[in-house]
Image (cartoon, rainbow, N blue to C red):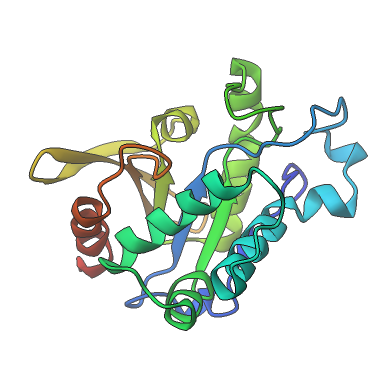
Length: 215
């Protein structure tokens, strides 16, 4: 993939899917030092390329051992755990979470340039430059479903598809956008609330369950 700066995490059983569906989880943006080379594929080294994979590995290690990878990381670790609870509908144990979630999904962060701190939002150019890598990823891995964390990542994705009826449960709504991939396969992208804040795991579980279980 010629435009992707942060390679996705691809679970060892991704191709087997969940309920027969390949599931891609898409976060928003990485936080790292504001290097001038960040996002420039020609200057990418292995440490940068594997950043997303390392984040998922660090999270899995935290769930297994309780070891926080670095001071101040508790917030994003809790974000991933909030999503896991929404996925299962309860607090899974480590083995179940690893085997039934992270080993079976692809995880990708949409914005392909990191920001310097949690309060910084990527600029419009960063979102625009992330569109081509995003299309490369979904055409390469052909997910059936993309579950997007938050409106910023969802709204930043390219057009070319079509909106379909949103999925609702009680007072929450998940917008849905359909892409037709290069192969002709259709891929359904769903926006959920970002699990970092004001996130009801129990309610979003119902949305996620309906996505995975629908024909």
